[in-house]
Amino acid sequence: MTFLFDFLFIAGILFSGIYIYILYKSKERGLSQSILILFFAILSIILLDSYAYLHDLTTLKLFTFLPTNGSKFLLGALLLLYIQSLFFEDKTVLKNSFFYLIPFVTFFVGVSLPIWIARLSERYLLDYSFVLEENNQIIRIVSDAVFLGFLYVCFKMFFKFKRVLRCNYSHIEHNNFIWIRYLLIAAAVIISFDMLLALYQMFFGYFSWRSQNVIMLLLAVFILYAGYFGLRQSKVLVPYFLLEGDQKTFSTNATPTSTQNLENSALKQLLITHMETEQPYLDEELTLNKLAMGIDTTDKKLSYLLNQYLNTTFYNFVNAYRIEAYKRSVQSGDFQEYTIEGIAYECGFKSKASFYRLFKKETGKSPSEYKNSLK
Image 1 (cartoon, one colour):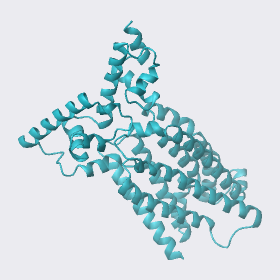
Image 2 (tube, rainbow, N blue to C red):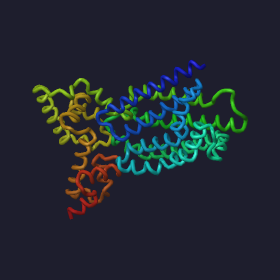
Image 3 (cartoon, one colour):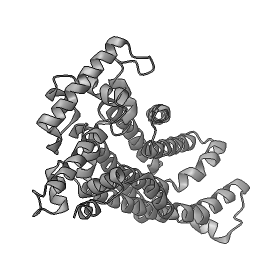
Image 4 (cartoon, rainbow, N blue to C red):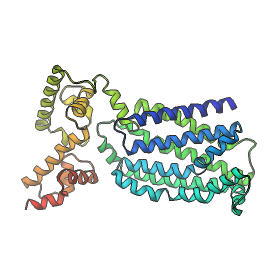
């Protein structure tokens, strides 16, 4: 059994390390990727802590104790910040981070640090440090409850803004977003099981084996599967890494040849003509693949054209046309009986929040301010 634990713990640590490297090397690493780097780094330390307990490595246990003891508070906050980073501007997410990290900081100062000092000095310098050690199961249950609270908010936010998520990454198919749901469900299952084990031990006594090793085993399995699923199927988890992989046919560093420039120029004209005549941007379910099929090319070639030749993204390119469609609709007066949101939906937008944010960013005015300026 020890061999199985060793194998999964080490594999989980190595895989987390690989994942951190991939996320770190992403050329356009954003806040969501940075949050995931910290998330997987903490998971690695947690597994390393369990490895230290499994082999009774005292020095290593002291090293990993501080980041591990309050990790549920920190991981819960990071998950919530990760979900928010998919919907909100970085400034808003970072502003919220101070509030979400209060439970972790409080626990770190009031619980983790006194216990760590007591173990390091082999003396209980603070009277309540001994009480904390004696009530480890209660602390464990409270930590689990707080983590589940974070997950509850994550689930609510994810499903509330699911349509926004699809809109923001409308070139990615639905299955690529299953990652986020799997991430939250797996976390909920692992923490719920941990709470059940803690409750059982509190009322019926300790097991003859370390129950947290089972939780760490589940965590290691989750990391391995999450890595496989993320790398093989999900462009949300490491979007830029995978998009670069999709475009490996084209050399992003090499200067395009004259033939490539001619091909890109022809494809650009074909794309613009298609957008102006067929108006595919009015379809709120438009994806990169659908648009590529409309101009008889591949999604890889279209993605390269947008990202490298036109220096934009599918999302920004399509929504620029939708914003112009809104302007024309308001100017024409044909939609006087429509609300602003109604006109936006007619122009292909799926989300009120996304429309208002993009329009303000593009024009410097809110949709209502723009509409009123025409009177």
